[in-house]
Amino acid sequence: MQFIYDSGVYKVAKVASLQHNFLGISFADSKRNVEVVELPLKSGERHVIAGDVVLSQVMDGLQQTNDELGSQYHIEKVLFVPSDTPSDLVYKFLTIELIKRIHNKESFVGLPS
Image (cartoon, rainbow, N blue to C red; front, side, top):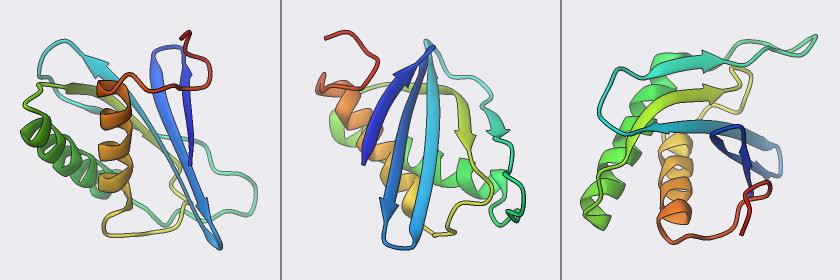
């Protein structure tokens, strides 16, 4: 997996064999409505993932991680690619990995050490 920080957005890309998924998250100081942003499709790609599915998985991952860490992270925006490989759990997994990496102060490409 690749972890990147760019202009206030934490990003993770997971590529394994024929599966590929991207998730971007920006955080807020308090609980609010989460904006879901579908990134543009490339020519020839099909829309296979809905924003509400991604948001549901992200919120599940957020809740699980906050419960495990005793933290209070809040998400402001979620970015995803609607042509990525569909999965019932991948965005939950990616959310957990991102938040734990932030919480543990691990490195992100583009984030000063």
